[in-house]
Image 1 (cartoon, rainbow, N blue to C red):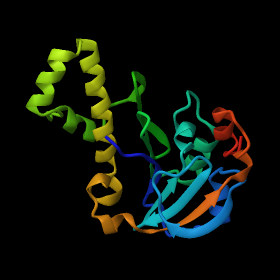
Image 2 (image 1 turned 135 degrees about the vertical axis):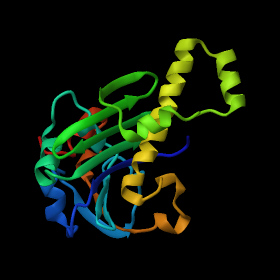
Image 3 (image 1 turned 120 degrees about the horizontal axis):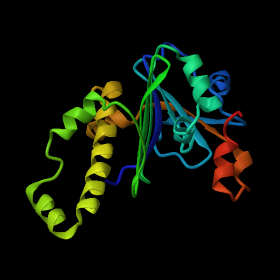
Length: 216
């Protein structure tokens, strides 16, 4: 599980022009245009990549996911919902645990955060999760090893971690037609516009760095 992905997808976003006005309208603060380049699903902190894939809008920012996983609706989440009230918004973070949020027609229908434990598990199971729960997520050797070496609690945690990870990739089919980890090499190279918030560079506190990137 070596992937690192920090992307928010807006399905069927329409024919939007990627520019400063779009970035600001989505609640990003103090981001400056850097260059046109290839899309990067694993941006550094303070970077933002904005791209269109077919008719979908993709935004890669390492901290945007936290705006969708707060206990109350953040200003950024509200901004996205108001900007795309009838669209499907899927925010995903892989790499330090698995975090995903799915919004449909302005309502958060699923939120899952799984790391060393299950931090949040809100909403009904999605079709992708129901499908995966009926699959064998481990091969026979893995399953035998885990049952012999792990306690029931440890096994369940490992299972939930892998289930969340696989579900996240299954959800990317809604955008790409197949899982993001199943695309051909050439399919990962699509045009993007890169932005950066330089004001966070001298800030040591990670929480403050994250908050400084969004309007409050």
